[in-house]
Length: 95
Image 1 (cartoon, rainbow, N blue to C red):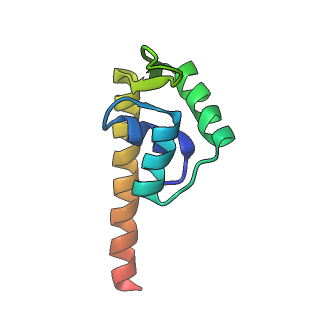
Image 2 (image 1 turned 120 degrees about the vertical axis):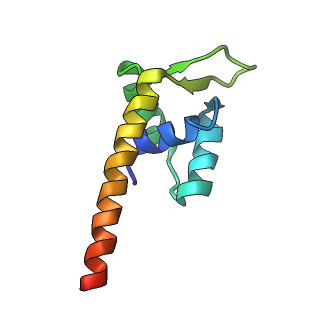
Image 3 (image 1 turned 90 degrees about the vertical axis):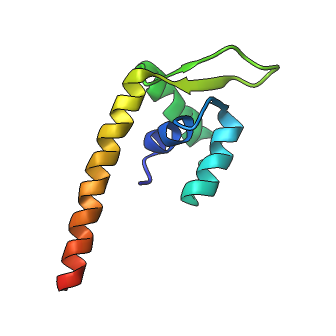
């Protein structure tokens, strides 16, 4: 799972975070470093699709939250990824 949008959604599924916290979280759970351009490009696309939204700012940092639509999309993507992993594992056993 290397799609920046899915990584951001997965991070926000745990709770609201600002950009830097999302970058750090993704680095920890996926071992993928999202650069600022990649991260904020993904955030913009996710906001346009109504999958995340900005919440009240804390100081200068802008936190984001996942919406119900975003949770549904993430669940669908996780289900698809799960099926792919199951298929790959089954096929590797016979390889």
